[in-house]
Image 1 (tube, rainbow, N blue to C red):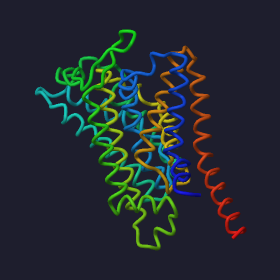
Image 2 (cartoon, rainbow, N blue to C red):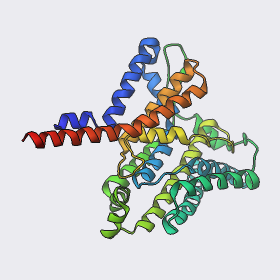
Image 3 (cartoon, rainbow, N blue to C red):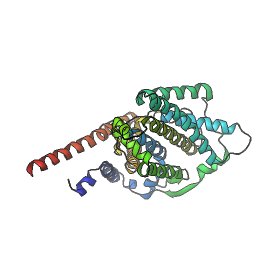
Image 4 (spheres, helix red, strand yellow):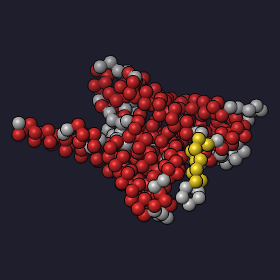
Length: 337
């Protein structure tokens, strides 16, 4: 397989081509879809999904799976808002994100200790903590919507980086909270590509026993992964709160399927060892585009789940098929040499 074919068959290229084809089809049906305003709208709608996806990509690259991140985000967001409303002085918006990230990191530490310290299966642990965190939030923290969020949060939410009208006169805007996604993207990209910690994550995902033999402290690395993913979930929760301008303890839980689908479509594998920041962001954008288009076309929500479930199967199976085809070509080339 030559270099051009290898690039074209990479998961990122496949996702990009799929996104372009999907956009073209929607554009033929609805010419107003192909516009700068639509791109701005898609970026806004994919904000929270993309932040979540970057954290989940780290977990999948290490060979694990996490379904507790929406519960961590809801817990961190709602608890932070409750704490801030309980003090008498104005808290800067940046501090809200820091507190939410710290609460998320603390909840992620529990996952990390159970998985990295005690060696329990990731799916079982995160299923348990999903229920645990949600139960503690609704039992001890609160169950009511908080609509009287601080004034500086409202000001932050109303600050736009870009604002424009689409072809039918509807407003499309990109809020200032987009910088959170930019910051998380840079952080994860540097962490995964330029540090020993990132290489250790891929090594553990490729072969946990092999990683141990070359001196990687597997347990400690896993603990750190879940702490970081918890912090990222806390940031995603606070981003969601600023976008909706209210704290709802029932929000976010249920996003697991969309986020995991985005990460898998972006090239990460359930078996570990693979995953890129670029592919993950493209996957999040594609999932948002599909859901938004189906919704605007009046397709029932349960059909959206059918589509997302199908995409997970395709996204999981496609890299395996590509690998098998590549190995088959290599065998044929060696046989004919």
